[in-house]
Amino acid sequence: MVFGSDYSKKYLQGISVGSTMDNLNHKILNSLPIPLPPFSEQNRIVTKLEKLMQICDELEQSILESKTQNEQLLQQVLKEVLRPKELEVG
Image (cartoon, rainbow, N blue to C red; front, side):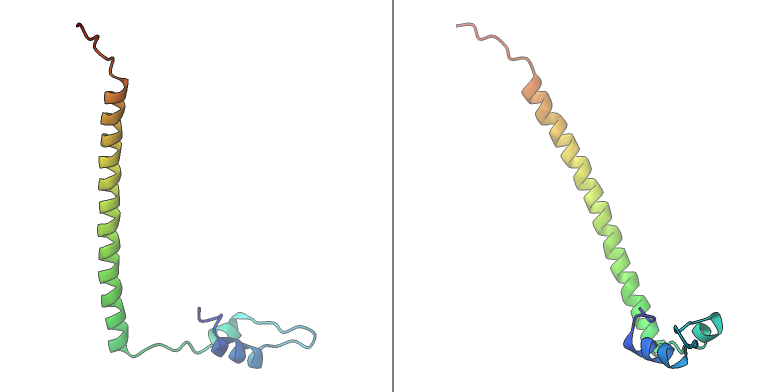
């Protein structure tokens, strides 16, 4: 995302080398300033991501449980459908 940003593109276009075609090397790429939010904001982001990852884990577990229940239900339905019918005596 950093390399694709307008900020980075402008910076790298201004510092790239080459007369026919612009080139970038490790030195140029390593000189790219990468803006970071303040540390308190980074902590807030990490806390939010951890909460979201926990929700994702819970959803994944719920999906697995639903899948298991669906498979059990399907097996039961198949047993009912494929069970030989008893002859009625009347």
